[in-house]
Length: 303
Ligand SMILES: *Cc1c(COP(=O)(O)O)cnc(C)c1O
Image 1: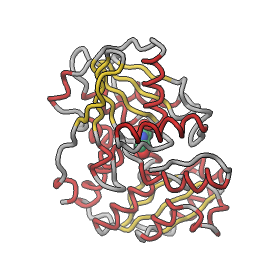
Image 2: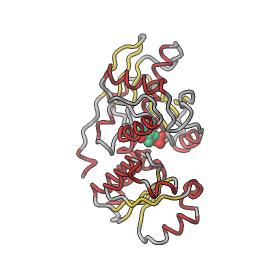
Image 3: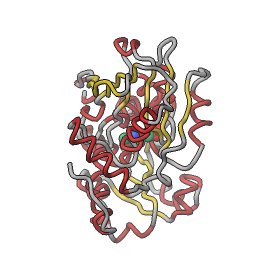
Image 4: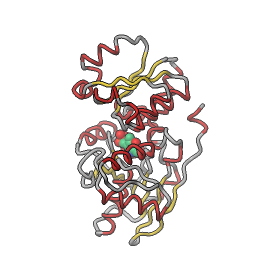
């Protein structure tokens, strides 16, 4: 099956920076769209769906969501019908303005665009409940794909050879990936999550999934919030690509690497010398971000 054919991802060295050795685990190379942590998160969910012969999967996401794109690709690959509940009524008439939604549509995902109020309440809202009543046998996946079996999937990111690192770094949305990494972390390792949202909800979620205390969330590099960017960040990501030939995504991994480099440069790094950074993928979002940057007459990502 799809999930069992993948090889282990490599730890690519970035070299020494101010005496710190940094490696990056190229989970982005797992698959062009079902990449990084989305592959890990959806693995056991889809295995369960196939074993139980559930015909339809329904999930949630914004118009640039890596999770929606990954779910659409997987459903198409594995013969499971997918439905995406999209944040914002306005997308109803402009699917083609979002590369992510167009991609989902091309993978035969049904897109149901709902109001922001309904989206916030998810399946408890009247609007969404009314829709769900029209479908008989389905499996709901929460926003971002975070539930206990997806945390188990994310724990598989770390392998025995990774025990030599002092600190594991990951970007963070819901916190499901971080919870998996903490679960799998080795003795004496510390796990750092770099928040990409101006919300502290991940803290509770991580505490729900693990009792371990060897972790911390860094909230200082959100660049104004989820999906927000600044020219400074774009320049950093373009330079990073020039130097290492590794593409980063603007919502998650770009902010994390910016943060790591900044903290090291300013002598504020206090978590150990051997650093493993998880590249959680998400590269499908680059073209959508570039469209947005072009409209705003801002510098674009050049890779
Ligand atoms: C979804 C996503 C995240 C966030 O993962 P969580 O488990 O929700 O914290 C991080 N990085 C990338 C590239 C993602 O697509």
